[in-house]
Each structure stands twice: as C-alpha cells, then as structure tokens.
Image (cartoon, rainbow, N blue to C red):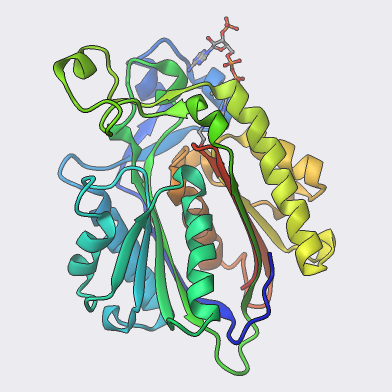
Length: 333
Ligand code: UT7
C-alpha cells in the first residue's frame, strides 16, 4: 500500500547486537542426532549466537537501540515511541517495550510490543511509518529482538538447529527537506488458518503452565517445517512483486533484498522466483541462524555498517513467520 502523505519516513540510524556465545553445528551434534553437513546443506546455518544465562531480551535490545541512537545522532529523550517486535519478551507482562523505555532512559512515551513472529520488524516499520507520515511522531524506535534458545527444545532436532538470539533496531524519523529517504511501500498480511504450523503451545490462556506442560515439553515451539518452507517462498516472492507494482520501480532498480534469514534454500528460492541476482541478497544466516524478528534488522544494520547499503539505494525487506504472517517494505535508504 502507498499513501498520499504529508511527511516521509527516513531510517535515521540502525544498530544490532549478537550475544558473544556461539553455538556451532558441532556443539549441536552432541545434543541431538544431527550432523554439520546436513544442517549446512538443508539450512545454510553454521553457527548461532546464544544469550548468556543472565541476559534477557531487553538487554539485547538495549545495546542494539543504543547503537541505533548513536548512528542517528539522537538521544533516548528524542524518541516519541517504542515498538518492540518480539515473541520472546522478558515476561508477558509488563511489555518488553515498557521495560526498555526505562532501561534506555526514554521519556514516558508510547511503548508497546508487537507480536508478528519473524515478520515482526517489517510489521513494526509499517506501523512506525504511519505515525511519521501523519506527523503524529517524529522519531520512532523499532526493535526486533529475541531470545529463542529459551523457547526451543534441545531434544528436538527439527527445531533446535535453526534458532539463535539477537537484537536489531532502526530509528524511523521524519525526513527533513533535502533528505531523499522514504518508506516507499508496505504490504503486510496474515493467514491464521495456518497457525498450527508453528506454535508455542503453553503459557497463554489456552494452556497455562502446569506440571503436565513441563512433563510434555509443551513450553517449547513445535513446527511443521516443510509446509512453512513452501508458504514462505510463495508469500515473500509475492510481497516483493507487490512492492514493485506499488512503487513503479523495476527489479533492476532494487539495490538490495533483505529477506528473513530462516534458511538459505528459502532465500535462494525467493531470489530465483522474484528474479533478483543472489549478489544483491543480504545473507548472514550462516552465522546467526534464524533469530525471528531480529533477522531483518540485524542483516540491515550489518550491510549498512560494512558499506554495502548506501544512502539513496532502494532496499527491499521481506519476511514471513508464525501466524502465519508476512510483510514486505520497500524503502529508499
Ligand atoms: O521463521 C519461520 C520458522 N520456520 C522455518 O523457517 C522453517 C522452514 N523450513 C525449513 O527450514 C526446513 O523445512 C527444515 C530445515 C526445517 C527441514 O528441512 P527439509 O529439507 O524440509 O527436511 P525434511 O523435514 O523434509 O526432513 C528430511 C529428513 C527427514 O528424514 P527422513 O524422513 O527423510 O528419513 C528428517 O527426519 O531429514 C531428517 N532431519 C534431520 N536430519 C539430520 C530433520 N531434521 C534433521 C536434523 N539433522 N537436524
């Protein structure tokens, strides 16, 4: 969707953080019946980062947010809103956004969590863009941060090999005169009828915690990987095509594609069916694994900091996740 608007949204700064501890495929071989070659061939993943036992999700987010503020040359007091995209908040209540507001030393601004799993950050950018376009807010902090290792069963080889912990942040600011940056289009969607493909059974009102939950490992995620794979390729490809239609850009004018980093084969399939060369796809899944809402902002930040993404370039962000959700944003950085 594109909208006539008074103001444009500029990404004024990004930041990211990966915890120090690295869990390799060889480490996982000691926990479950798997092997390095299978994991690399089927997923592209070699390592994932794991939060220290005393770190919570907002600790990861705090570092990413401080780096984003520094890059934007802003202070926490300048923020007007915090959108915290996560499915692994410190606690269900209070929200991670409220905890982060205090840790950051931000004013008593609007702060809320957004739950769209791996599409979270792209959903968050879409929401932030509305606040900026209307003139309601000037600086919105959007974070994707997860500690998934605490939701994963290290006895289930189909899931435990995939996930890692990370945080990425971007500050959406009102573009000033002379600044060419903008969020050019955004599409987002959900198909709840496919929700059972990727679930965290316990901890909500449907299944409060109990001894039975713990006895049956229902506090951990369950996934039907193959079905999700097909849906991911289809929805991300169609999101990218819709972005071209909405903006009038040609595929050659897309400088970078940043897909959700779930599996190298999913990214290759999206690049191929969308028709973009793989050299234009930002990929870091081999070192991070799938960090849900954090994958897109972490890859975005890394590519900005190492000089691949430059001001004025067109960047396409696309994601899919539990829900099932999907979202795509085209922006001029
Ligand atoms: O952010 C959204 C989160 N979810 C996803 O992104 C998941 C998307 N899906 C995927 O990434 C892939 O479907 C997986 C990586 C999860 C699985 O890859 P696959 O190529 O779809 O494998 P498969 O499920 O078809 O399994 C193939 C074989 C099976 O053995 P049999 O039945 O052929 O004998 C599995 O039991 O591989 C076996 N297998 C493993 N072998 C070694 C499954 N997991 C493993 C493992 N190590 N970790």
